[in-house]
Structure formats: C-alpha cells, structure tokens
Image 1: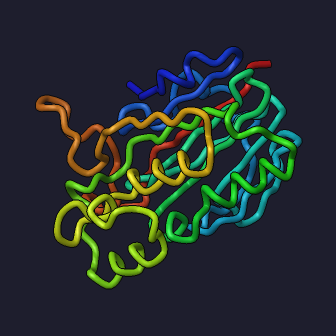
Image 2 (image 1 turned 45 degrees about the horizontal axis):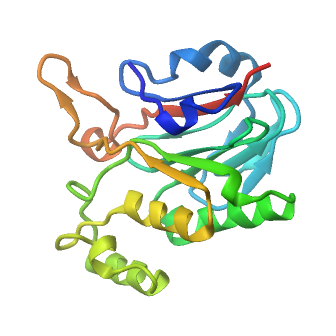
Length: 223
C-alpha cells in the first residue's frame, strides 16, 4: 500500500507515490527508481538540484526538479515530503522538509529556482505527503518561538496548535499557497500514530522507532 495525491494523479504523464512501511518504495515507480535515480546525500538543508541525466551525482541536496523522465524523490520518516508537478506534466520536483528545511524556507528556495527557470507557479500542483502531525510532534518552546519569529505572517496557533506541538505540514501548506503554487494537496496521515489494528504502524517513524529506516516519496514523468 502506498498513498497518492488526487491532484497529482490527474496530471497527464505523471507517476508518483508516497511510500509506507509495507511499500517503502511506491510500487508504480519501483523499477525506474532502482535503475535511474540520482545519487545524493540528504542533509536537512535547502540545496536543490536540477536533474538532467540518469544516476546524476547531486552531492548534498534536499530537493530536485527535472524536465527529464528520470525519477526524483526524497526519503523521510516523520519529515515532510513534498512532490510537485506542472499541470501539463512537463516538469516535476520533490522536496524534503524537516524542521530545519522548513525553518530555512526550502519551499521558497524552490519557488525562486522555478521562477528563475521561467516557470509560472500558478501552473504547478504541490502535494504534501504523510509526516509527523501536530498531534505527536512535541518540541522545545524555544523552537516554537523561532518558528513564530521566522514566519510572522502565519498565526502562532497554526504553527503550534497546542502546547509545544509543531505543525510542519500546516506551515509548508501555508508557504506553498503564499508563494503562489496553483493547487496544494495534503495527505493528512501522521507517520507517528497512524496505525492498523491488525498490521500495526502504517509508516516508519524516527520518533517512534529511533531507527534510520525511511519510506520514499517519488515522482517521475512517464517516458
């Protein structure tokens, strides 16, 4: 089982998926991912690579965009994965937005990068995948205060709906809409507490498991 965005599913010539514990590399993109994926180190930063060839060495990056049919994606186990595509299916992008990347405004970095490429952000669709929710993501009060200062245009109650809880997905949704992306979807599944009575946890969660196991969120243009 994997998750898909209804908005992205309606874009022509795009295949995508948000992985789960049982389907960590979404089945629709598995074959091409293994053969064609870029090589990189995910470091919780804001660097974004333009993928122009298969198995491209990208260094330390936390986002990609491409006009090729090479798949791009990010791995996460509580951080926010974001997959994006132009409405005509001609270009796609992927972001890893943990608390560091979110606070450093990786979504704004992508927006500026796409604008520099001549893109019209209103013609783009973004989908926020499963991530740890405000129901479970407890952090220090100093970090909450830092986020409130960093995003003065966002209501503090949206950043932290309850005491010491941080809502990364809501912050990224607000930012994507503020930046002018045409449509923003959100799959409201919490990687920490989403469970199946018979099968257990739906997702790997670093906070719950303390391991380095992740699931992948991947998007590609069809060849």
